[in-house]
Image (tube, rainbow, N blue to C red):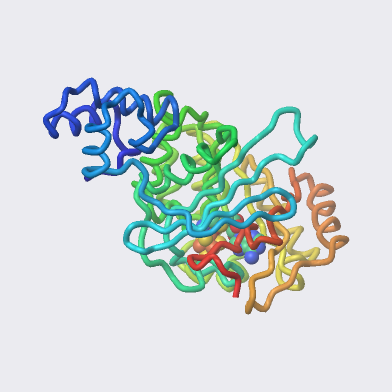
Length: 348
Ligand code: SAH
Ligand code: SF4
């Protein structure tokens, strides 16, 4: 049976009708799930006890089980989730720090695959390859889980920046985004959702045609093909030129400015020459550069540049006319920062 979070109100009503129950019960359940964010039949108090028990024996709204929760000193929380087939992923909540922003944000960082096939040499998520794609329901369920944590306010922003390459699981990812922005379901604004991709040009073009004003972040990490192919071996068939062309098309069709993500690895891609080449690239499309300090992954041979090097790299780009920010690094002491998520939830 389809995951319940994937069902529209009509689909749910039809599924309920197929059980020999009146369709309006389906609408009631839909309201519990989405208006009240109650995913447990036992708590749907306007259904009879018999019906609740029958439903619980036939279907489940939520399929993931929280195996472990870890909280970093800066308030970032990471959950390890197990699906019914035993596969595990991690998902992260990044709340605004008190006093940080005029209004409180709750940003859910969600995964799209169990592992990742791309294998960027600095990332923990791809160390053991990919074992399967997540379904749209499983992608949405991560946001739902953060919406329903005890005492928590609803998620305000979503970043598809957890484990996996979202555009390698294109159909499920786009279906999940459509559920999240459906006013009757997730209720989020597409402008509050950011999809980060290692850069699959054909899929970027396809996404541009979906009519969803999503923020798109492209993981560039190197300003020339030679270095990029060393850092992202799977990018061998894709040139930076093709990526920039796809990015330009994304901008012209959606009107959304792009972000270029660039993980700074000491002595690898942080030289003044790299900054100059990167600045040249930024002149070719409307974009913001997001510099990410490398987050350590046990066993990997990289290190984070010294803070003054990070600032110098940013300032050099700025002097050359690029829009550039350094991404705040959050969650690292719970291994919940960019690039640290794993299937096992442990860091070694
Ligand atoms: N697969 C997608 C989305 C998930 S990764 C992508 O690669 O874009 C989200 C971001 O974290 C990417 O920009 C990625 O390059 C970055 N990242 C991966 N490993 C990292 C690490 N060890 N330290 C800092 N950032 C990392
Ligand atoms: Fe996969 Fe993204 Fe990690 Fe690369 S950085 S291995 S594409 S999750």
